[in-house]
Image 1: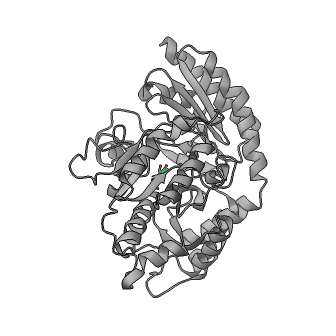
Image 2 (image 1 turned 180 degrees about the vertical axis):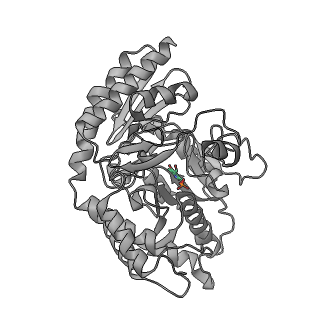
Length: 423
Ligand SMILES: Cc1ncc(COP(=O)(O)O)c(C=O)c1O
């Protein structure tokens, strides 16, 4: 099987014939992945932020099975169903009260495409065709589809590979005031200047609130978020918050924008929405935005085949019920406290530049790039699954991880980095 996979199946950002080892997963349960080779390893990645309750969760399995016996899918054009309605009710209840409308889509990237369309159509439907650009932040990441790529970091993102094809947007300096740092107006200067100079062309600002994920795992000041909101209002530009990675408790708040107490015009959620069971995302927006989009008889121009897939919505409903009925705040707080004591130890290693922690996110930034093909087997040998990139060794464990399991992870990270520095 591995041979076939290696020869024919493409994996994320990887060559068609990968030189690195591929690991066959047989099953997964709780915080453990069971490999075909027999090893059981602790998952530090929550399958890229999404598996907040762990794997093979009885409540989510039951929700999927029950929905399966009713219908797994039905088109959303002209038809609707209870799982989508219930999910919309919950999402609108737990997010900012300004948000009143919701569009379900298949993945985070698509929810970003929908958000961008909402922003562009908001202005164009009202006769303003000049607002055709997005102001984004350097070191941001919003997905891999074309619109989403065009607002990812222009250097570390995929702009070079797709130069000439991507929509040209405007980028502000990456957030430089980190979480916990004292605020100074100099930190907003570049953003403010770009907005002042270009606001007549800017439809919306997009950002990942508080944590820039795949663009560098940077954790920044809530005050910056607050100032961005104020300036968007002042210059009449919509604010899109991309909570695809940070939503549903990951940063210690249900949504990261709550750290800055701001109101989004458009909000994207995905990943942990279904507890990592299947792909589902949503774009939420206000009455004001929808009225603008629909001015002069227009409608939002989007409609995927698998929009609001009932199976995914049913699992999302069960996942949200499980999350909201659990002591998730305490669990995330406990993970944060433990990461702060155990992962911080990595700072004593010469090769480590910095350790950053927020909620159930722990990041060790090295001074040099990691060697993934060397590190991965070292982690597996120590019974854990950690997938570093560039200079970053990071984890975002499922919220149900216990103290002992988390210690196995943090000790493995320390030991592997230490061994790497001597290698
Ligand atoms: C902040 C953010 N936005 C968008 C995306 C894209 O989501 P998806 O991979 O589901 O398309 C990601 C994925 O990592 C993300 O972290």
